[in-house]
Length: 457
Image 1: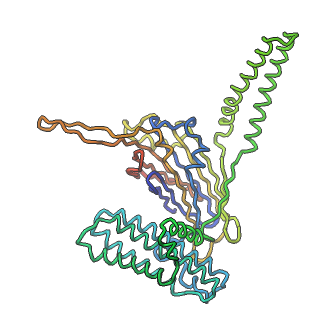
Image 2: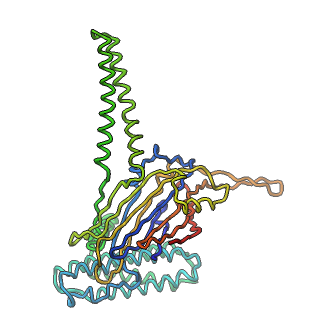
Image 3: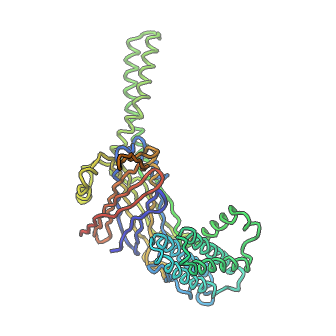
């Protein structure tokens, strides 16, 4: 079964990656254990707020081989195949290069040993250079097709330069690796000069960092055309929600009318007391109507899916996949047995009172086959943890110690821990269950520790 990964994306963001095959059906469950000291509950952070503001879904064609895309060079040759396919095949190839480069740069920067980092960076630069040469080997003569080529070539050249400059800025600076750094600098300079020779960008655009960045973002979206799927999100149970609100309102209004009629029979004339009683009755209706409706609705929708995302191909508009999403706060007794067992493996001091937030995603692939060279779909789900830390305490603490009758103090930051259990079920009903321990402060994720993994049929 394909391995599913939970990794850090940005400072306070998680990313879950997994692959989908043609006609596939997979289920993903994430159980967040949020300590009570974080102040997170259904009252402070509703499921709807967190889904719409902090969860993002991304789906696109994918190849198993990232360094050498399966979309071979012949697919970007206008001389072979239909010209109408040129843009799509060009985008497939360009998108794959960008994805591979992004992943490999991040992995290279994680290497702590300088002796390993720079050789790996050199290999990555050589591989990237070969891919760019393969792209530029087929420059179309047709003006319309040439515009597509120049957009992709311009963006990839700029993105490659930015990626390696970022690597050089973040990597340790050592005179022992001056030749390796010079090689990478020259690689970046060649790409910069290449864009200048082809007059891809005007001098006015180059002189304004905002303009060149925004232009490249536009070009990035252009190369995603046909590769990244369009998505449409639908809220489920909308009519059921209206029915519940209408029913509750009808029942409360009926009770209010009974009270009003009883009050009217006791008061033959309109008096101050009668008006006061009517005011109290209608006031009580407004006080309790929302609370009653909310309580009944939460009980009715418990266990029901909340949203559906439809992914479609941006070219022919055909439906590729459908994703159904659940998100709700649950109790300990609602945990699946295998998930509960993993939580019980925590040390006693870590078993603190916590709120449990359950995310579930069922994805069904409608397409029976994919574009040439792409044998699966890359599904990514991003979880922003910023709403979880907004109530945490600021500042640092102090640690005092006694050494040779002298008191010293050290600044220590406040850290918090979230336990996440990931449960992945494939089409054959095989499950992969794993617990992650996430350590974070108010500004970033400090560490993600992958713990016990269990697989079951």
